[in-house]
Amino acid sequence: MKFLKSKLLLTGLLCATFSGVSAQDEAEETPKTFELSGTVDTYFRYNFNEDQGQAPATSFANLPGFSLGMANLIAAYETEKSGFVADLVFGPRGNEAVFNSTDGSNPIVNQLYVFYKFGEKTVLTLGNFNTFLGYEVISPAANFNYSTSYMFSYGPFSHTGIKLDYTINDNWSYMVGLFNPTDLTEFNPSDEYMFGAQLGFYGQYINFLSGMGQTQIDFTGGIDLSESFYLGVNATNYSGEDTGFSGVALYPQYTMSSTFALGLRFEAFYDDSTVFEQPDVDNTSITLTGSYTNGNFTFKPELRLDQASASIFTGANFLPEKQLASFIVAAIYSF
Image (cartoon, rainbow, N blue to C red; front, side):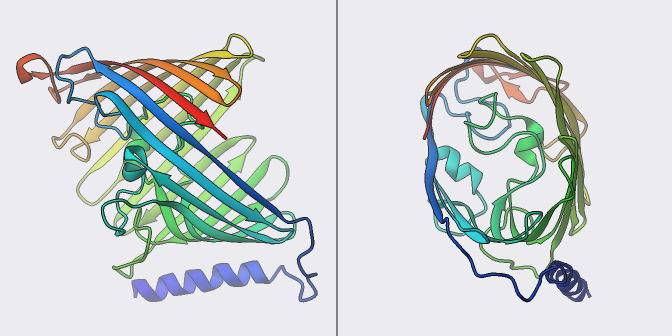
């Protein structure tokens, strides 16, 4: 029955798409564009808790000492009507980003999808693409803070499936999609599917993902309070059959000059054994990041403090502690 429902949903999605397409669509025309872009990042991490092997239970930037992030290569080809994106990642950060891949010990495919445009407002995408939930993303160049939040780390990273994006006007848009189980990137071994949807309005987004006994509702947005001061926000709630988590984060960012900006992430995160492997743990994380940019190069010094309601970290002599303080210096090159 689950398979039949998924098939019916997929059929309805395709029918809704093609019903708005004229049979006399013109053939693809020039211009045709090919673009190769990406990033390279590396960092240094030091813990003030003395146990250098300890890190926040979040993704990326968790290795001690002088450490590697990833090399990210993105090839994109686009014509008037269609195109593709092949996004490859190499290195520790890339391995964590595609952790559920079946491609041996060194998976490299972060995104791999094709798309077709039905006019100026409607785009159909098929393949593997990064998630639409959350404020943060995998690419270190697209995040203000170098380390990542708990909400990002334990939400989905990627989806493989089909989605339809429709732009209603300059201020409103929506997306609907049907996906494999979360983070299963190459194929679907269970014959079960997830349904996703997004409503965008005036730069704010309500995101929804549900299936297989799991549901996540997420809000992502932000506002320019002045020409130099921006406030971002993310709130999420995940519920599974036996576990769940929820959280909220604020991202105030102040641009001090054309080359330097200062940003803070304040995250309050509640976990019911999904992340910390013990029930009812609250964790507050405060991350202060500076960002110096010169051309394609970005330098990010960062201080982070995690304070939990239970002893989930280790400190001197490997004794359990409720807090973890760390310092990170990251270098990112974008091209």
